[in-house]
Amino acid sequence: MIKVGFIGAGANTKSAHLPKLIEQNDVKAIGVANRTLDSSKKVANEFNMEKVYDSWVDLLEDDQIDAVCIGTWPNMHAPLTLMALEAEKHVLCEARMAMNYSQAVSMLECSQTYPDLVVQIVPAPHTLPYDNTIKKWVQEKMGDLILLDVKATTGDFIDIKKPLHWRENRDLSGNNVMHMGIFYEAAMRWLGTASSVSAHSNIVVKKRFDDNTKTQKEITIPDHLEAIGSMAIGGSFHMTHSTVLGAAPKIDIWIYGTQGTMHIYESSDVDTPQAYNSVKLKIEIQASGSNKWEVLLPKPADVGGWRVEEEFISAIKGNEQITHTSFTDGVKYMEFADALKMSWESKSTIHLPFTNV
Image (cartoon, rainbow, N blue to C red; front, side):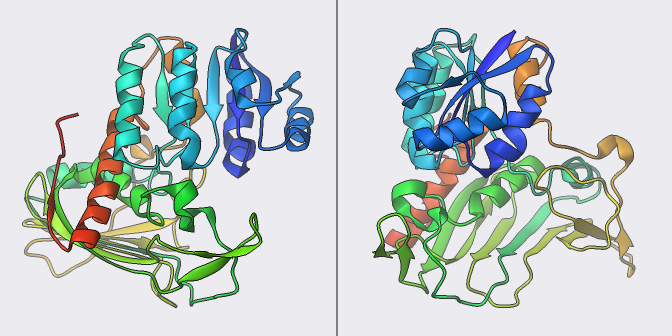
């Protein structure tokens, strides 16, 4: 029996990680340490867990627990992961991996000193049903990459009355910017990593009300970001991420190759089976020499899904390796996040990788 403890029990933990771990064979949810004792008791009662801990330290020191699910904000991911590994517990950590590249590297290096322990980052979910289909087209039909063009926005007009979100709070989110890491991680699955980046950022809404401190907090994380650069496989990329472009498309991705073009965009006109937190996307392609767009439907065998908790437990049992998402890949997207910040602050191009991890 694999006994799991939960540190942090927010929306994703309660809607996905807890129920999906419990439904795995030979798994038992033992206890929880949330931000307050009262909230911990509520989660424990809801999911029939026998233990409520006064602190996450008490949970990690419990020898009964074999694995931990870390569902906190990114500011706690590195210290919790390091202590969990040192306590010889398997780790499933919520995304984004860490506050910055340095923390992510420390998590990876610590995990490498405990090769018998399984570590996993919760994957970017939006494109999971489509990733295999996109990757096959890239490998077989695209030719050489010319340009990857990604626009990801909320489509919202500015609302200065909205309270501060944790993604806007550098104390909690670190160098992560909006949903940039999600889409860079997805792009890594299709095309690999960037080799250089030049970024320009803007903070349109300068302050928001912080419900926790009951004060106006200055925002230092961009709400609009433009980045251009080169891909390691050749070709270029352009990314736009924004929470202030009113009525803009929420997801609009173009992949231009020498032999074909792919357009990926949000659409309700989609029959592809969806995964947890995925988005209904339509894929259209046009081959070189053709004037006709075709809808590319994922074949049933290629439709991906949300296997996070299943993969975690299967890996602990020694039946498979972690793919969604490994600490190595997490380090790569945190490296990109740091490179963006370095670029917009220095107004220069940053080359990747920093080191060969």
